[in-house]
Length: 235
Figure: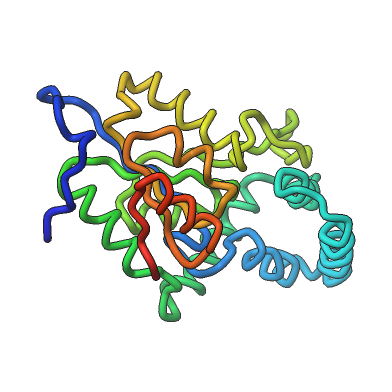
């Protein structure tokens, strides 16, 4: 594996110092929106086409109103109200097999290669995503990712989803909040770490580490990376 470029943040590392590379997932590591790719499969397996129609109508209205990503993210999970967590985990595994095993997987090879390169050099990769663990866990297993900072689903006493999510919400600034809490728990330094994101909504996460990498074609993020001297990884 070719060595990753050394950075200023590499200076002064102590022996045994923990280092992490934080990766947004959708449109950074995979070329699909995991949550929205999964939902039609969820409805089809449950025989609820009316739920999919309601879902599409609700999101069309919310987008027309210009609602922010945080609101859209919360809206998404409300469509799972009353579902059993076990059923969601099983459906996520089935979706992953069909999407990533039975067909050519929708990986973005250049960033996946970065993830593997970091892992091989002792920099632990971490997912940071507004998606949920039932969808991300099989992907993390396949890519050798131990840690996943993602949406945490709130359950009732019977193991059913309430439709609400716990804080921090891993969208926008919430990604940076989750990242900082993780680093504090791991007793690791943000300046020693990498972060990869494809959208301006990932800005807070990128700003929270010493070695941010802007990914992909988004013009606003690419311009900001150029202005700040960050690495830009075109796809």
